[in-house]
Length: 55
Image (cartoon, rainbow, N blue to C red; front, side, top):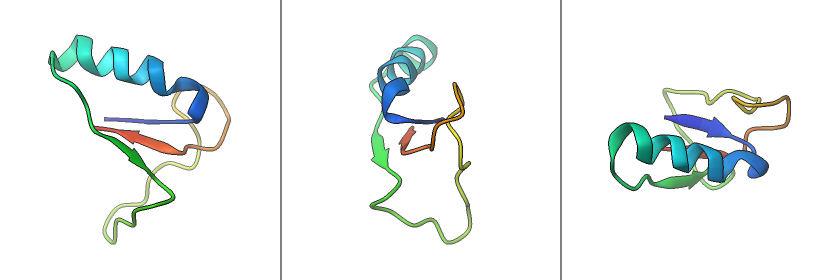
């Protein structure tokens, strides 16, 4: 699972495919709410706001 900004979506997808050998789901964090989990505020790769969950 990767939580990234718009600039790092492609990188996260590539890493996911390399690791799991399957296509990930890309979830827009502005469109979903997880009642029991709060996603990180910042991208895993930089200090920009996290916008996507790659799972």
